[in-house]
Image 1 (tube, one colour):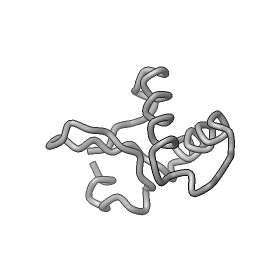
Image 2 (cartoon, rainbow, N blue to C red):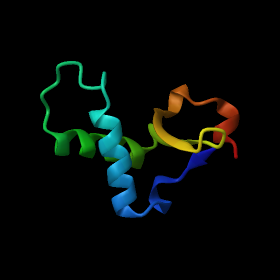
Image 3 (cartoon, helix red, strand yellow):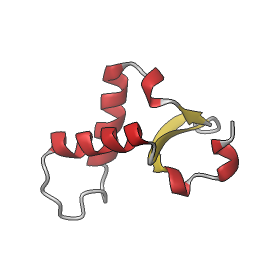
Length: 76
């Protein structure tokens, strides 16, 4: 299930994005400041190239590139 990013509380969205950009394996030696990485993700969400996916089985949210999400999820 996809969660519209603009329906999340601003603090919740920020925490989700910060968790994503600081997750082990996501920096690849990149020393870009945290705020810059957060703004890049916000921009991707704004333009629709990234989405928030909710896994009901695990009760967890994660960020994903829209192109990596099954097409049937995008039709709902």
